[in-house]
Amino acid sequence: MPRARKAAMSPAASQTKPPGQTTPSDRAKGQGQPRPRSRISDATIQLELRRRRRRRSRIVRWVVVLVFVAVLVTGGWLAGFSSVLAIRQVEVSGTRMLSPVAVEQAAQVPIGRPMLRTDLRQLTERTQTLAPVESAEVTRVWPKTIRITVRERAAVYALSQAGTGAELDYLLVDRHGVGYTSVAQPPKGLLVASVRTTDSSVLKDIAVVVAALPVALRQRVDQISAASPDTIELALDNGAVLRWGSADQSRLKAKVAVALLHRKARVYDVTAPGQPATR
Image (tube, rainbow, N blue to C red; front, side):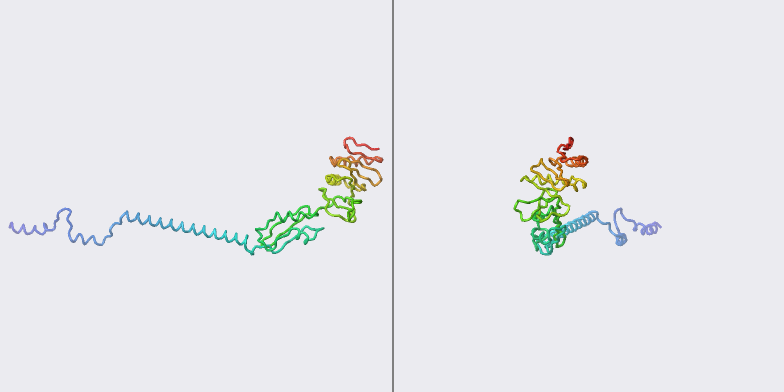
């Protein structure tokens, strides 16, 4: 009987294993399960991805910069050196006395030169050498046109040139006292001045006086004369004389003169507008 008990217990004892020891069946069970990934390998992959993204970003930036530079260089060449944007024609506006051809010839616009390399200031200065031109503006009209806009002088009065040996009898003078063209007869309604001095500032002073005259007074003036800047006189249509003096306070002198002319006299004196006189 003791032997039978020992044999019965033998299979159970054979199934037990020491702690920590694996059996073939245990190893077979573990073959179908995924092994955990290493943390170090994951970090390496992430680092490589970041490097690739940075590399692509640098390449894109360089490509953009190179394209931008290429566009600038090409545009600069087209605008400044090629014939694509060269001057092909000239437009002139604002002329009344002058012809557009005369303005274009004076400006000396370089046909065929690139628009961007054309000095507009030089064109303006050359245009303003024409005596009838008070001011000029030169602009670029892309892609091929230079536009010249002139403002011609307007006559304020006509200066008599009798006895000076001039071919024509009258010189037209503008508001700045600049004489710009001679004519045989002054335009209708334009006052005539006679100057017995070589002081060019007198021409401007007379222009100031004429501009200050109201219509009613201007209609009564036959001629203006001056021997110096302080001796401007107006000859009236009734044979009387209006002594003006200098061009200072011309607007005030004009108001005083209008009131003074209501009196009958041969001489009206407004040289000192605060103390007018007649005789």
